[in-house]
Length: 224
Image 1 (spheres, rainbow, N blue to C red):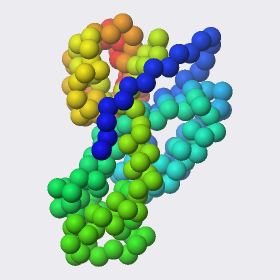
Image 2 (image 1 turned 90 degrees about the vertical axis):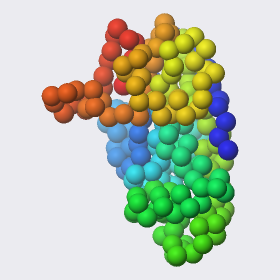
Image 3 (image 1 turned 180 degrees about the vertical axis):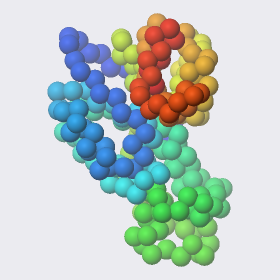
Image 4 (image 1 turned 30 degrees about the horizontal axis):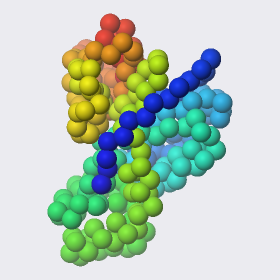
């Protein structure tokens, strides 16, 4: 079961901070991106959620992020809606049928599918049995996911996957709002610092063009 955790980070002096969100199990592309931005362990690196599912390297991505965190104390990994949903599908007994439906709907991608392929599981098996095999097989990875914070705040900015409510006590909202909020760019927030989010493709914010550039909203203090 995932619990809400908020972390604060004190950074003094000059620094470079790299924020990457929505890797979605594309480990090779993520590694290429780190090369292109010339990432080093002197940088702060924040993975702003949704590092699993949709791609075919989910387990490998988790292991690589753990490796990066062992190499540097300046690497932080946050929860997204995909980690939140994945944990529920695997760990909540009442969702075993939904896990099976998810497998059949999504197809050849994601962490659950990797276990099905590796262990040659039969999807005709009882959902409860399949769920337990997947749960046991991913115990270490799920424990890691459950340990992750929902947000990371510094004096300059707040990183969170989807957004926050427009209220001073934003920390008291539900976990689902932190990782699933869809109207954040419209509603905004009331903090006196920038809030950095991922979750939605930035092309969603343009009506007449396809543009995937980073969005800087200086009025609302939002970086998407």
